[in-house]
Length: 89
Image (cartoon, rainbow, N blue to C red; front, side):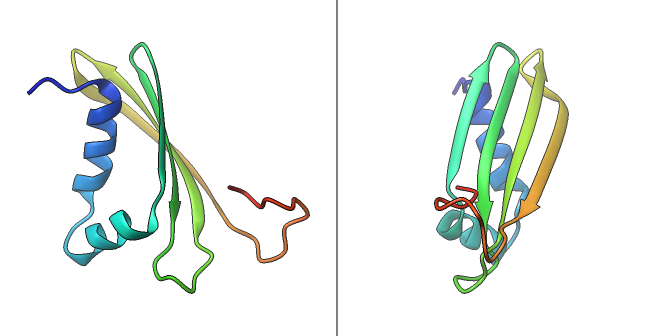
């Protein structure tokens, strides 16, 4: 099966999780993905448990010959009191 770079990036992020962490990822993470040529960005909200505000994370992939050549990430904890009425999401 041939996957797009975007599908590969999402599959990679899901695969790196192990055990019940993966189940938590599927239950508490919302993924948004963008693809532009050989670059893919995946935006996630990660919550270790439902009571936790969690963090937002952006993973940026660069593909070379249909393989992940580089991976960068940046994250920020979700503040309890955000001045933005919509928060970080």
